[in-house]
Amino acid sequence: MKTMGLRSLSLVDPPPTFPGEQAIRRAAGAADVLEGAQVCSTLDEAIGPCGLVVGTSARTRSIDWPTLLPTEAVKELVRDAAHGQVAVLFGQERSGLDNREVERCRYLVAIPTAPHFTSLNLASAAQIMAYELFLGLSEATDGKPSALGADNCADQETMRRFYRHLESVLLDIDFPNVRPPVKLMRKLVRLFNRAALSEEEVSILRGILSEIQAVAGKKI
Image (cartoon, rainbow, N blue to C red; front, top):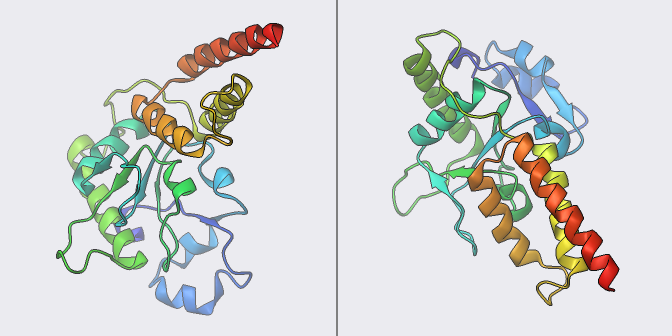
């Protein structure tokens, strides 16, 4: 990926031996990227500062998630990178992204493949996305910092707190009459991810949620 200009790598709970001799050999001259990788204990730590997170997944989901082709996803990433950190999220080699990890993504990326062989290994998916990002960034900025605009999106940590607050309010007002409201929350996360809320907009919504809690508390 170093040949594509990408140097920022975050790994969630890698093996204790990381980077290890095998990883360095496979890095093919990019050992400095491995040695400079941010090692995180949780996904929240890895993507917390990011506004836009795009995940790669070939699996179908019980709740459809907004899905883009690589070139479409790159346009979104390049645009939002002008205003803050963005990330491409890859799952584990064997299992890919689970539902909770998908919820952290505004979009999923589906890399086109032959119909009877829809899954790519992790290295292939990462290289394809790195190449598309290299092309997309070169085309959009001609090698210069992007001036393409979008409002500053709230980062992942802010959105995570908002979703916790939202779920708490739903439980307080007993809506829906299902505890915990897992499926409803997944649909609401999808809705608000699609809206790409700014920090100010999240603050307004959380103020409304706090008022709802206050009113609900007085009625109990």
